[in-house]
Length: 88
Image (cartoon, rainbow, N blue to C red; front, side, top):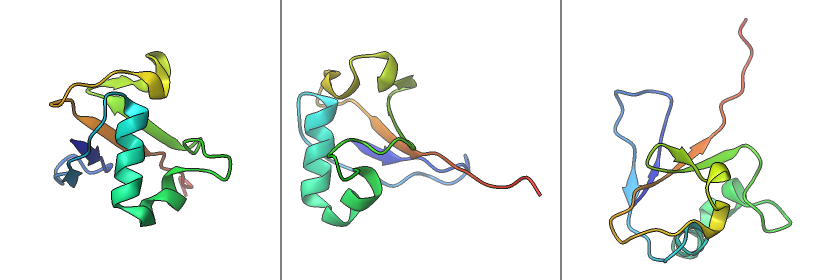
């Protein structure tokens, strides 16, 4: 299951089913099924954009095995875009 988390904890995040044995495979499957997401998640070099964070549960994949992090069929993968803004 892939979720997109928002900064509003009271809003239930949208979720979709995706397949794969690693985060990279799941992410690739998501983009294949939902092609409009590619420009938001992947840069021109084919890498996850620097402002996008991917979590397995509460663990950032940057501190695991990145896109090679293994997943099970019931694993929840969360995609979180960084929020930038002015405090004014």
